[in-house]
Image (cartoon, rainbow, N blue to C red; front, side, top):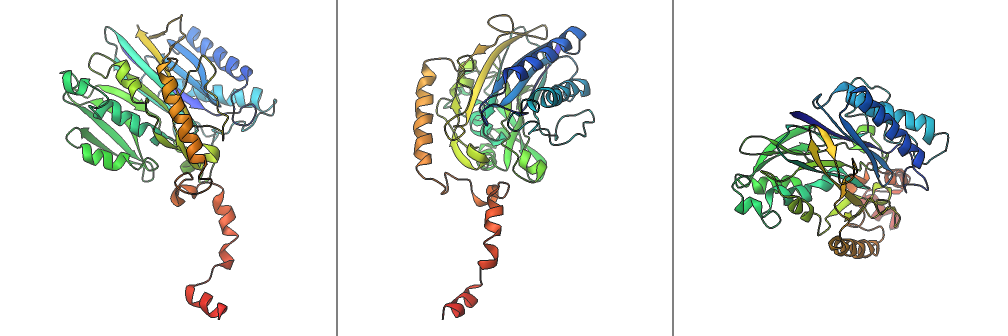
Length: 380
C-alpha cells in the first residue's frame, strides 16, 4: 500500500507569551482532524503541540503536496486563529500565516511542512520530531548523525542494507536551490554545507541503493518569506526506521548530546536543542523563552493508519530516564551561553540579525558614524 505521512505545524497563538497553545485551540484542531477522517479525506490524524506550535500528523493516500490535505491544514489554522486565538486575545494570533493567498499548497505561506510518500513495508516504524524556538537547520546535525556518521549509527558499518549509504537533498535557503550529495563518498562536501545551518538545510534523505525516501524535513524560513522577524520556524521532521533504515535507537541517539541551534529568545540567540517528553508537559518553553526543545513521537503505520501505544497515542520516545542526562547537559549549556549576554556567539551573527529587530536600533546610530579621516579631523 502506498501511503503518505504529512506533518504540518504552525504557531497561531499562545498563552503567556510563547508558552503553549490554549486547550480550546488543540480541541478545535482535533475536531477538524476527526471530521477529515470520517469524510475519508485522510486515513488517520493526530494533534499535539511543540511549545506554542500546533502540530498536525496525518496519513493518507493522496501523495505529497495534495491540495485538499494542505487545504485541511490551512483551514484548521485559519479557523483556530479567527475563532479561538483572536477572541481570547492570545499572543501572536495567526503569527505563522503570512498570506491569505492559499491556492492548493501551504508551502511558502508560513506553516512548516514535512511529507513522506512510500510503499508500506510489512512493518513500518516511523518517528516524527517537532522542535520549538529554532530553525530548519537545527536538523542538520541530527540527520548527519543518523544517516552519515558511523559513530552514531552502527548499521552504516555492520548492516548490509545501510552500508551503501544515503543521499541528502540540501536546500540553499537564500538562493532557493538544492543539491543532492551522497554519503559517504561526498561526506566532506556534505559537512561543508550542513555546517552553515542558517543557509543550508536538509530537506530530504534517500537510501542510496534504491532512492527510497528515508526522512523529510520542513525547510520554511519565516523571516526570508516575510523579509522581517516574525518568529522562529520551529521545524518538523519525519524519519522512517528499521529494516533498511537506522534503528529507532540510532535515530534517537542523534539527540543524546544536544546540538547548539539558532533561535531561542526573539529568534536571535544560540542555544542547546533539549530533547523532552510531551506527555509530561515538558514541551513548553520558559527560561529565556527556551531553551530550544524537541519532542519525538513514535508510531507504526498499519494499512495507512497511525498505530500508537494506546489507540493513536504515539510512543513518547524521549520519556526515558536516559534523556535526563541530555536534559541536564542542555540546561548547563543554556546557562553557560546566557552568561555571555548579548555577545556572539551566544547572540546570532550579524548576517542573521539582519532579519531581527536589531537593525531598527542600529539605524539610529548611522548618522553618527564618520569616515576615519573625517573623525580624526573632527577630534583634532
